[in-house]
Structures are given as structure tokens and as C-alpha cells.
Length: 51
Image 1 (spheres, helix red, strand yellow):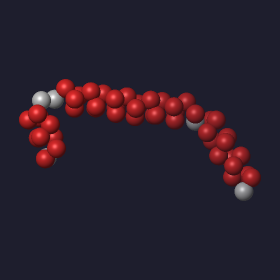
Image 2: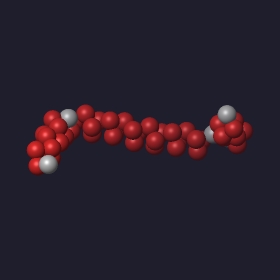
Image 3: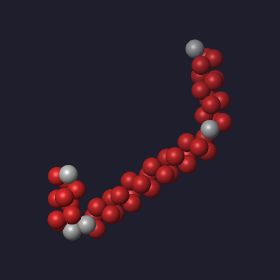
Image 4: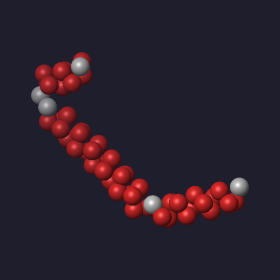
């Protein structure tokens, strides 16, 4: 049990920059997606919703 935890911690330390980069990309996509949807007019929002 303790060995698994050590392996997990070592893995997180080794790949922390990759995980951080992926989280930043994911959050950037959410933010820009929300901005784009808010800038759409009503007809475009309906098309997006019903497609």
C-alpha cells in the first residue's frame, strides 16, 4: 500500500509539468468557448443547441 503511494507521488513529480500544461489548455478552452457562445446571436445559439 505504501509502495503504491510512493510510486504515485514519484509519477506526479515526474510528469507535473505535463499535467499542468494540460489543465491550462483545458481551462483555456472552456473560457474561450464560453466567450464565443456569449458573443453569438440568438439564431446561432439555437442552431448550436438543436444540432
